[in-house]
Image (cartoon, rainbow, N blue to C red; front, side, top):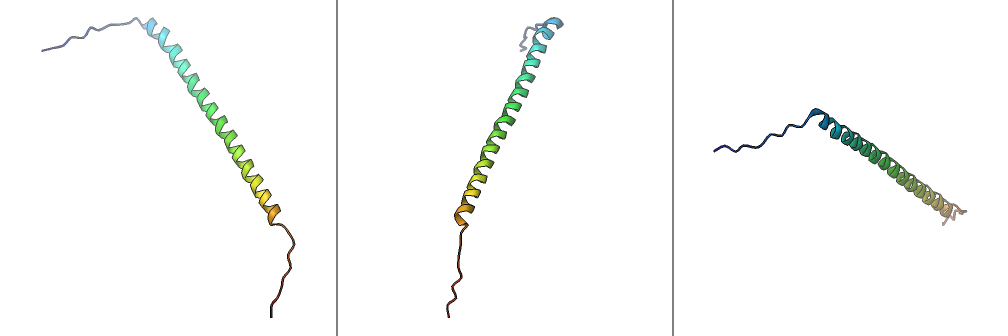
Length: 73
């Protein structure tokens, strides 16, 4: 038993009319998402780096101080 599917052939201009704008839009969306991701992770890295630097600077202030040596006999 054979099953026959109807074959629909679209004109070439219709494929170009639908395909080219669709591909251009998808490429634009992918590039936009990539740029947004780079921007987002760059800002997150800057915030994280600033927080680490701030904590290190604060901890150095706490540990900085005067001390004296006491010798026991």
